[in-house]
Image 1 (cartoon, rainbow, N blue to C red):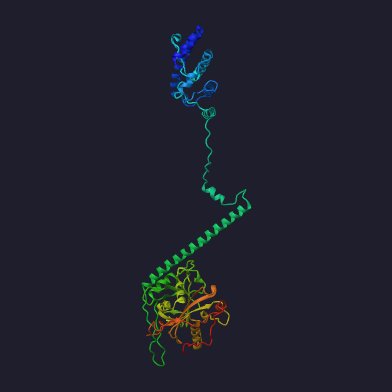
Image 2: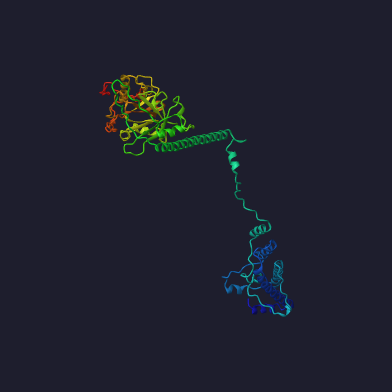
Length: 514
């Protein structure tokens, strides 16, 4: 409604009481405007979070009984049609709204601005049919934002009560090394399965540790033995003797031959100063002149057991030392004279080491005829003389064989007769893995190298048999036509595992000439 319509209503009533009430309404409206302005200013400064009392008050103010929002889409004709049927009831409603707003402002800490002379102001007619809605919400955009009751309660609860820390995974305390080690052992409260598992684990760890220690100790021992042998080789090479084939001196018929006077070799003298059991020095030479595949001193003791696990210096050693069979006689000299003739068959023993030290490289003779042709010569020095031998047989024997294939060549050392000599060398020829054109005659000195082999497990021995090189003979004569033997005579134990193989007794065999 406009101002004109309000004045017409007042004239129609014709009552002084209505005029007074109109003035009072004007004063109330002015007070409400001042309160609204202050309320908007205070709302901009006040925090968003409201107390429960303020929220409840605001909720009451905007109840359905007092506030009815007029849709913006309502036309002006509808508004003009609405009339005030009971001005007095509207005034009372306005007073109630004033009191509610005043209470709301007081709760928010807002003091409404007082009017100096409210009666002097003229009544401003209401522009809408619902003065209460205009009074309560004259400027909706500037009023403080109402917080829903339920949400406000949660906000107040969070603000008043201390925030609870989120429960996360507790960080496990790091265990000390001592605690971790202790857990490896059975503890009180462990189940039977857990105790068994821990015992099995501990036994495994101990086994690994012991085996690792044994392996490390084994290879350390080999390394130490090799270093020692290298130093002995350097010591001996400084006084290398020159090989000369021993030629019998001419004798006058009816007179005894002149006995040779023997002098100790300088290299042997140095070795004897370290070990009095020294009887010589052995080299297995290479045809191309490169380093020998074996280059070591040889000792002899009162039995064949002493140097199985003892180094040349007398220390405990898995590699042991190369040693001559204790039953052999080899240049036993006294006052420059040979006391006994040398044994017809010398046998030297040595371990087949994993690092190819000692006799570890002899296994290559078993696998290749080319290897034989490249290394067919053995040089063996006594403490007084130098000898050379030519290899003619390479074969495997059973150390415990008691069958018809028994061949204990290591026990045939003194060959008193020609028959014994040829029986020995011809049996070696039947067993040799590779044949060659080297001839063997009675009177030739024999030398055998013996070492362990894997063919017959712990019972097999690899034997390399050679004979002395005669004066004026070509060292390599007969060694370069080696080939595989088509009819090898193996020990019985070999045939037990090879049912399809058999030695042919009727095959052509050319023995060494008698």
